[in-house]
Amino acid sequence: MSKRLFTIGYEGLDPERLRDALQSAGVAVLADVRAVANSRKRGFSKGALKAGLEDAGLGYAHLRVLGTPKSGREAARADDAALLKRIYCEEVLETAGGIAALDELSALAEKAPTCLLCFERDPARCHRRLLAERLAPRGFVVEDLFG
Image (cartoon, rainbow, N blue to C red; front, side, top):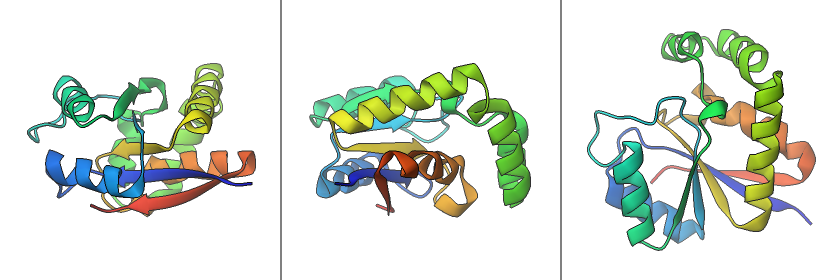
């Protein structure tokens, strides 16, 4: 039996639309996979995001280790998917800390419907896609949400 994993980018969303999208999909936990959980957008910095989600009955987990290094974020902004993948795999997913964090994410998502969060709206231009690819062999089927 396959397990469902969701992804969403908050680019273009407000906190209310994010919560609505999560609740409509049946998400129980938002896994924040940003290296830096601060945002210039109201309601998307770690504390405000967590409080707003908890008020709506949703869980929040910040998996900072699974965030994209600065050089990877720059590659994503330059729309260089190959460079983003190389950087993210080498500097995150193929490290002891990254492997442990991916195992933590997998365990979290096995317990409750979980959604990966980052900024980028297009999952093809974000490391969320790389995380989803690593979780697919563990039986996860990924659905991208757009709010």
